[in-house]
Length: 427
Image (spheres, helix red, strand yellow):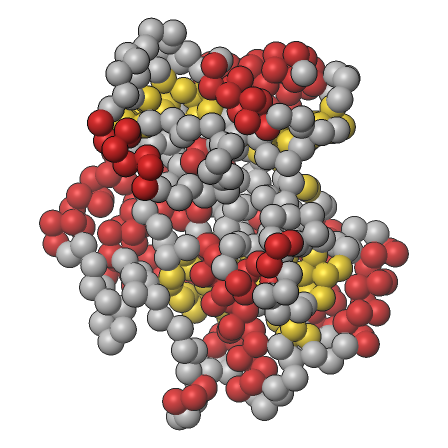
């Protein structure tokens, strides 16, 4: 049962012996609460070592779109493990990788058909930036090495990805002196910001491309924008002959209500990045996918015009098998209908927060539900309060949000929204 109060207070040996040796992500180790020891997952449930079960409200950083331990994905990985866990993708290829590339190309809009595999979202962004910069270099234009990125945006934690994220509002300000300098602008959400962006593009001939998270800026605060923003960006990129990059690492695979967020705007980028839910939350895999327009700039007899990037575990066979199985599930199970139902439930369930003191905004897009607060005083205490009530919700900044698995049961989703309403009311 979620929130079962019965506990086994004996700490597992593996937890006690291993904890002193790890360095945890996004955590001030001196002051952060101890992490929760997990022994099993299933559906939308996280089972802790003491026997408690938590309803997962964020699908393990938005990855487990089909829920945990889906039997179809598990069976595909087990079959692939028997045949070939991995083989390098340099000079060799394998069926799971080629099948996945073909299937992604068939699903994506706008002629996105050349798939470069890597192993994480941040690296997928790095590859996209290198593609766009070298696109110009290969055409004999070496000055175009900057990118336009947007306030509130986040694209990853590696150096290049940090450089096109908003360090002022985000988590990377400490690295300001390390990072390459790009152009940070406001999203063109109205005529004034669109005109300011066009002025920037008109006056600078050092820009190689534009990078944006379509419809939702995720880790920057779950900030939504209208599809008209993407139409404006496509028009400006075309007018100034720039490459347009959509970072769909968070939004891809149904999270916003369509299979890819760009579909809602009826526009396509020149390069798209995918990861997170690509494998259904089972194994690390990412893809940077370009049009033939981009790829043809690298098609040459000159070795120095090749894209010089090659992750060791690129197109890992196990991960590709999982991704193919995940795509199967989008075909044979009603994922987008489930997202629509979740969206309606989130709108209903979070609505009571709208008029509560300290609440700045309540918003829903697809299977993303957000309660934005004026501020959060003690983030660690707030996170602990959710665990105490049997759910795993991980607020950050000034937001409490839900991004559940698409397969979550209606009663589990209601529990999540009810707990959020109760917690917000008590703040």
